[in-house]
Length: 79
Image 1: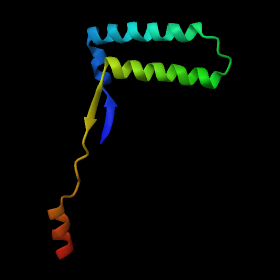
Image 2 (image 1 turned 30 degrees about the vertical axis):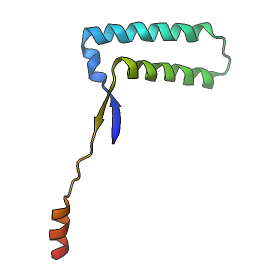
Image 3 (image 1 turned 90 degrees about the horizontal axis):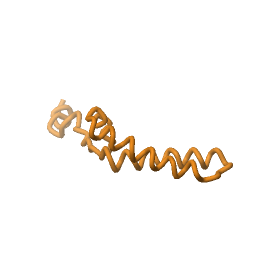
């Protein structure tokens, strides 16, 4: 089962404003830190984006539907 962030919720102005506010607030705390390692800095920024999206937008899960049913496999085996 895969989980995806519901990016479509950004079309709703309420979610868009809330996401922007939380993102700005989180990024400001990172800006105040003095980090010289660019890789570590990038990972912090990436984490902020992901966590904010999880909190504000949420997840949707998709169940993969089997392409060929057991009955179809049985019919194919009979041939």
